[in-house]
Amino acid sequence: MSFLDTLSDYLQQVGQSGKVSGDASLVVGIDPAFARNALIRCLERLEAQDKPTDEFGYPRDDPASLFDRWQHADAVVKFANQMARLLRGSMGNTASDKEIDALIEVAIARQIGVMDALPSRIRTMELDRLADIAKGFAFYTTLSGKIDSATYAESIRATKKLVSGSPLTAIGRVFLELKGSDAIRWLLHVEAAQSFGPSDPWRVSRETAAHLVQRRAWSFWADDESNSGFPHNWDTIRRLAALGLVRIVEGERGLRTDLEVLPIGRQLLSEISEVGVTPMSVLAESILADLTLSAANNVAVSSGKTTANIEATAVAEATVRQSRLVAHEIRNMLVPVKTALGAFYREVQTAEHPGDVVARRKEGIDRGIDSVFRFIGQLVELSQFAATPPEPFDMLVALRDAVSVIESESGRRIEQVLPAQLPPVSGHRARVVTAIANILRNATQAVATESPVIRIEAESIEGASAVRLLVEDNGPGVPEPMRRAIFDEGVSLRGGSGLGLALVREVFEKEMRGLVACEASSLGGARFVVRVPTTGTERP
Picture 1 (cartoon, rainbow, N blue to C red):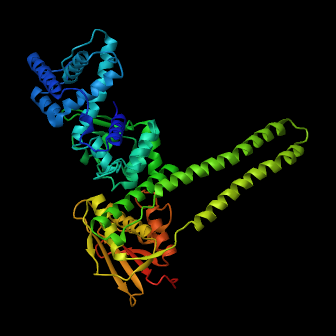
Picture 2: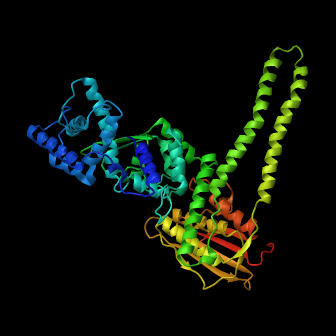
Picture 3: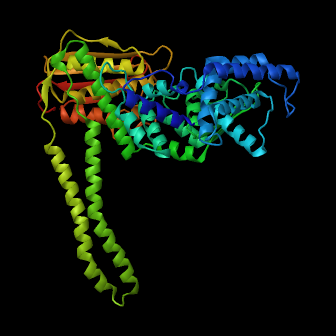
């Protein structure tokens, strides 16, 4: 069973039971004691052979080193579990449990160098094929340390730990509705939207995707890939392999390791490496915004600040409903247009007087196209009417909520230099929390892994008529020519969607009549400066 199937099984289990569990890869029916003892029996047989080389003439692995490798993190149990699932979907679909156990032991023997065989050559080849898949999964989860379906699901926020309610988030629910490449595409969009850069072991970055698409293949002549010109997290690459996007042929005993990006990998990784807005990226951003607001609301409630609770905006649900409505209505409007155009094309090819055809068909085609534009205009107008009015709120509480969310999300500490109180400002509190969180998230993604510094400051200025916020870090900073452009939609220095900082400008400048800017920080990185009025008046 592939990693995609294992993840799907786990999320379905979470959705049905309402509980998150540990390593989902071990929740299968194979007795762990059987798997461990089967390994021991096979290794004893290998040791008894006392042959210096394998059938290809390569030096044999020492049975003791094989024992350590297969027992580490219960890799042999994971292998046996995966083999059981794979066999049930292949040549073992009618086999008894005892027969499945026997096939698994043969597979273990052949994987470590004891060349047992099944009655037919074809069945032996199929067993080897399944065993290669199972071994890839078992050692993917083992060599990646703690990475498994449960940990991965929590890392990409497909699940969350709750005292009550369902732990399956909208990210997990959307994944379960998708199949095949669309499910993988969804995971990549979700990962890229949350990635902290190429070193992130849980989420592929847009930089990593772009590098893989551009280079396509690598060869490493040592066990340590870090010195091979490949500045990306190897756990992430193994996960991409488990998703079928890249192929890894790992050499043993220090032999060459080959990495190749497969055609489906080039296609899907290209989509997230390019800066642009797609329906799937918009939905991912909307769901993540909802989760951020929900987390901020929980922070406010748990801290006792009940007067500052954030109302759940259901951004993602509204996006889905609106998208379905728009798609349905525009499709209905364009169907008669398409029909009329088809008839027009056929008639004009055979007509003696094409002008008569144009005159006859033009009105219907124009009427259909005009109806689409009227519908779009109504959507824009109604969206403006539906906007909730701004309300006064405590900026200090909003700042602390945003800091708590990003510290929990990134695991990085954010220095806070905040006063005891700030004058109230007027705006949409939920969107302000999201905007501040976007600035802080941008800083967490920019700083280095070692000795990161992120600081947020706030103060009342100009006789309490305005509030100024500063967020700065010790990352690489922003080149001076880009310091204004990074707030434009679709512009990103690290290959992101370019929507996060665009929202920052929209909230603080367009909605709150303030100012936002980026400049150099004394810490060595970037400093984001936000000034918002406390009176709600137009800025000069």
